[in-house]
Image 1 (tube, rainbow, N blue to C red):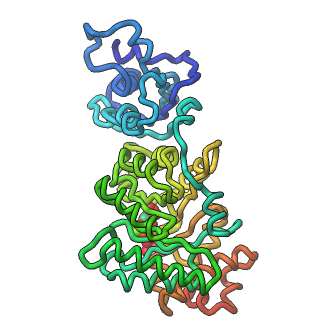
Image 2: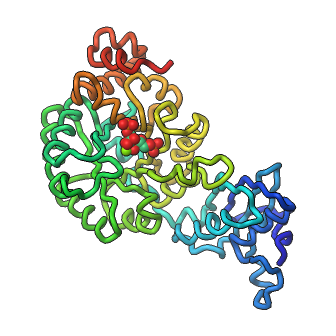
Image 3: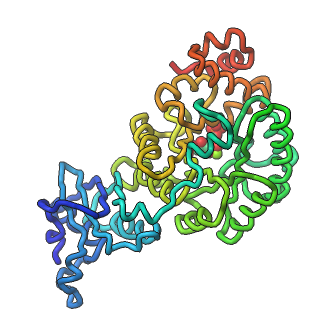
Length: 405
Ligand code: CAP
Ligand code: MG
């Protein structure tokens, strides 16, 4: 089959997996588009394979739509091992990005057919399960990342966590690069932080969550998940991309705990608007294989991520029959962002602040109070400035970082 033979503009997909790509080429557009369908399914550069058979040609991917630089390709399900995300990605997001006929190629969106969705359990808890567990009905969850990222010992880490829980934080998490360190051992940390969690729960009468980062070589992740479970933890955190799809898929099957998915490294392939893979696609796969919470962008913080894109990702995580993944807004956020964030992203989000809690001039506990006050003020219908009038911690936070209008 020649590359052009992979174009079938009158094809109507039924039970196929659909991918939408943005494509730029210096060569003939149809040839390049067909090339993408070929390389991601059954074809190669020389059309005259002596090994090709008519029944194999039937499962070729088909470019069935071309609109400007956007193309849609339908993939018959026989091309896939349906419950193997690595294999699916090796097909639709593999060699194609490096083909020389392609100048730029971006996988914009992916739609999984019902037959494939049935193979996946998705999140174990999802938004509703997590809300039930934390007993928080409809406000955004408030989270913090203990800062500095690295350097505190287990004891210090647990004290900082405790202070923020007391101040009103719901979820405390490790940073993406904090694992089992010489100065802060995993098991020691988890045990100390969970002890402090129990104390904070008793003192505040609220449910709290700790999300220890178990990111490590696979077998070690299993061991760490077990440590967390045996110590009474309910959550683990995994850096889903640096850990890799296969390991993430497996740990998610293995553990009974809720999973917080950190997306560190996504910018390496999501950021270039013409090439790579969108965060939307990453998020869809991450939900399929079980992430209960996922970083999707804070819109107004320190990290790149356009408003409409984040809205689209978040609504995708909450749509369909599978349990919904809690979108996490994080990165450079502080109390003054809360009103705007809720306005843009709604209440079904986790709002996290690291620097925006621990750099509060009155310290971590009162920094946590300021974040919680911001959420409560907005939920009660006040503007942040109004609510700050009789909430000192929020007032101090606004003096330091201002309010996003
Ligand atoms: C936030 C954070 C997260 C970022 C990642 C950090 O801390 O812990 O890793 O949110 O970005 O280390 O930067 P701050 P994203 O609140 O101190 O910024 O959520 O976009 O994946
Ligand atoms: Mg971080």
